Length: 398
Image (cartoon, rainbow, N blue to C red):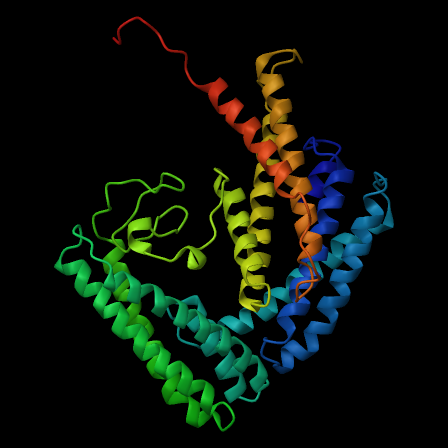
């Protein structure tokens, strides 16, 4: 919103196109409306939430409509829609701040694991009569599946000989395996008791969270170990003795020992944001019925969108720089055009996936040919990177 006001400032204009910023606002409010509606089911239905939520939805819908209208014109300073936009934005900020403050004051313990935090949040809401049990059950099932996947991976690590592992690493892996085994038992018991009362479930959740701390300590020990000297074959990143690359999070091949049909998806993309999106798509395509994989894909699209937004901001700053060359044929301006092309290709991909992942369930087959724009963008970035490399010199270094 601040960017929009800055684009309309007659005394100190930001240089942004007001219509483009208004379009970005429209997209933002569209995403916000979707997020708010999706979060409704799992948010505690406190008296404040029941009072504020309907107004929040109305405000977002009106802000979306206003930004759409303002994207078609550059409004005059006395346009009443600007006053309405400002007032609604301020009202929405106050409402969401109220809800955020209320959540912060729920007094729930903070667990290092975001998933256990979410599970406890949902359980406590059900226990206090502010949520339906289905919210707890759906998430608990997803979490149980993730535990079983971690369990499978750890067992394979334990069975795989690794001469580079010391006693500390080996003990940490054994500790992690034992913790996950215990978490699996408690998770199953927790699910089996959800048909009864919250009191029956609570001891299992408490033990689940305790073992989560133990597992976190084991993983922290592994991540602090001296890294394996071999770089990650997928992205060149650094590998810890936990077996995962700290950059792309894949496990080293000699620690995977997976059958060909069980091997996880691999991506040909080099840039981190493109690779993360590609891997999320591949994981979902391998198991299109897995709701958790679908949610991970939606998350990857949102993260890719944030990278696109950051890139656009950087490009806008570059275009508005005081030392920007005037000559349109200069090398710097040509490189600027190449970056602009990259941004357009990224936006083209983001638009495809944003539309496809809007629903809570997969709407059908994924967009066709979506990787092509990203591959073209990576080629341009590669050329730019090579062009910016310093030229080699035959003269000795000083």
